[in-house]
Length: 223
Ligand SMILES: [Zn+2]
Image 1 (cartoon, protein in one colour):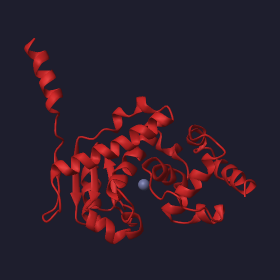
Image 2 (tube, rainbow, N blue to C red):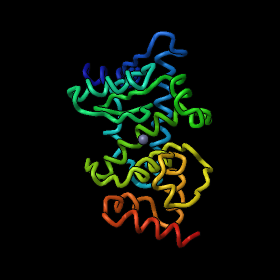
Image 3 (cartoon, helix red, strand yellow):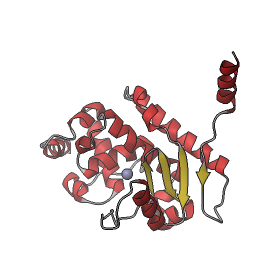
Image 4 (cartoon, rainbow, N blue to C red):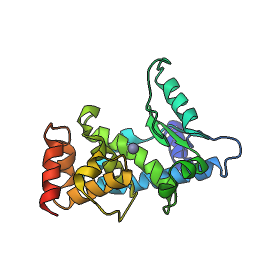
């Protein structure tokens, strides 16, 4: 009975995940937790729309760490995975990640400095958090097989759509969009494909060798 009460009490109070942030960060740990909860809510709703809600548990996080630079964030990812110095990490802009149930982000100021267009959106920081959670949901849908996430434009576009980033972005030439490095284009590609093919099917097929050619065919036929 006592144990049951203790569990109930813990549930009622909630367990506050540890949050760390750099000196001068313009907010509190509680505000960060609330923003993460909203981000999870976004992905919850997205998952429910597509019948993936049962996969959300592994996507939960144990702690959150915020850094004042992408370099500091990358150094932490290296540490989390015990990667030796000679293992190369992406040198492209890194603003967030979810590694071994640790949410990692750069501060809102750094986010705004690196990707001003994205950071200017309403609820931009919440969407950034949702984007990283969406990547883990994607991996969970594929039962952990990251190799089947498909081309970069597709898995980044998936996270852009799931998190609600870049809404209303126009799709130009699909082939150029696929070859671009623009998350705006990636989101527009996936949203345009979803007008013709259910997202569940796109996710299932994204690892096929002919996926990109077929996607291009669908998009070019509809123009
Ligand atoms: Zn991403």
